[in-house]
Amino acid sequence: MCADTPDYKDTLNLPQTDFPMRAGLPTREPAWLERWEKLGVYDRLREKDGRKPFVLHDGPPYANGHLHIGHALNKTIKDMIVRSHQMMGFDSRYVPGWDCHGLPIEWKIEEEYRQKGKDKDDVPVVDFRQECRRFAEKWVDIQRDEFKRLGITGNWADPYLTMDFHAERVIAEEFMKFLMNGTLYQGSKPVMWSPVEETALAEAEVEYHDKESFTIWVKFRVTDFALPDIALAGEEDTPEAREAVIQAEADAARDFSGAYVIIWTTTPWTIPSNKAVVFGEDVSYGLYEITGRPEECWARIGDRYILADKMAAQVMSRARLDETMYRRLRNVTPAQLAGMTLTHPLAGAEGSNGEWDDLRDFRAADFVSDEEGTGFVHCAPSHGMEEFELYRDLGMLEQVITYNVMDDGTFREDLPFFGGTRILRAKPKGGDWEGDANTAVINKLIETGGLLARGKIKHSYPHSWRSKAPVIYRNTPQWFAAIDRPIDDGQSDYGDTIRKRALTSIDQLVKFTPQSGRNRLYSMIETRPDWVLSRQRAWGVPLTCFTKKGALPTDPDFLLRNEAVNARIAEAFEAEGADCWYAEVAKERFLANDANP
Image (cartoon, rainbow, N blue to C red):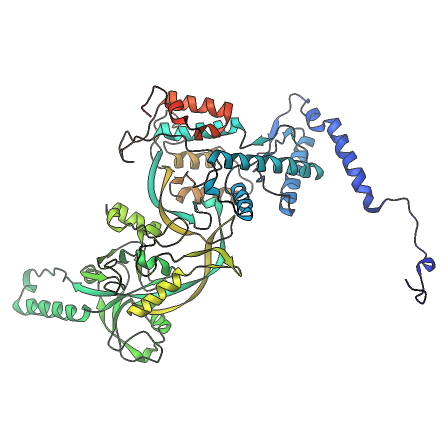
């Protein structure tokens, strides 16, 4: 302070106190923690024999970073519950734990690799797993100290860790129960897939956020029409009636030939994988002719579109057509729709190499309605569960499954027009994950005359809870537990399938407070598909099963079911952890003389 500036410090009357700043926490808090440690409060409380036990089963945090306000809120509420029950006379136990496996920790190690310019694929899997283990161990110790500083009472000296060798053994044993009771199978079906993380995700690993998506209306041309059989009987079977039927058939053939079935989708990138279109048998359809058009409109005068009557005005509006620019020509019955043959909008396009020249299947499906869209659903069974199940039940999966989308969300390199384009970016740009695949598909549809209209829609969409990136449905080979397959294990008191046992347990063995928790869990299990067990990751407990070389997943001897092999695996995991599964001689070690490696 310069001489010309007055110093007011000595003119202030400030209170004097012996209280330390911030309650002296930097020195006093460690002393409190040390005292609590010496007292062993948690262990002393366990000495009270004869009390009724109260156990709080804690959903563990991930060992991958410092605590945040969510951890603090979660653990302090649980600590209040544990302490209050101890004061009410229970033997109230709290055993803390950590989830040490899986994507969150693996993601952190991969981030470190990227910063160092290191490629994960160049690192031996056991070395990578050891790095993940060391990372988790470090953060378990850090988080344990931070939880202690929150004053949480628990058995901090002996927590449970999913990466403990014993825990890995138990997890493997539970998996091998599926193997032995016949519920384990390898299948292929659309699962929620994260292109950014290149792995399948379970429902619990997905969260829903609003997302703005492209939405398009696409034209599938009617190239053939087989007339439905119309039987005339009794007094109706007259020459005049037969002539009327013939004329009606001729009129229908004339009206439908060259018409277009219009579909609507919010995933333009699935159009190259389209194999079919489906309609609803309870939906009212009409044939509409375009009689006028404004500028900058993809509809053409004379075009005829087949649409659900309920959605026709809305579709025309999105195509910039007002009610004076089109007219309804006639009804279209489900029987007439069933007689039509459609072509893909990219069929015959120059440079397509015949990729989409096959005729599209066109049939009824019970999941089609006229509440939104056009009354028709475009089917890419590799990317939609309802379509997949429809063609699975028809025994036609081999005819409709495509493999156009790779693990990273790019189109296969040899796919005409779109090879190498990305559905999602590897990294967001300004918070936007949108890749170039949707735009490429839309532009090609415009070029080939297959697009009627386009727009944007904001809707709730699944995202990976870890990367926050959108996910897609993608057909991939995975391992599943069949939750509706009967289990003959002599334990059918609560049902003979996984689903029945889970639902019965919810109703008879668990008391929920509040009841809404029960309803949510029950409805989720009641409708869920088979349980996806596999993940495309390195840091976790491996799927400990062997398959027969050359056998198909549907063959009865595809999976090796051998108790001696399972016992050797369990014993090795207990002693060495799951890393032993990746050793060079693991197969020979576990199979021994019970099977030919």
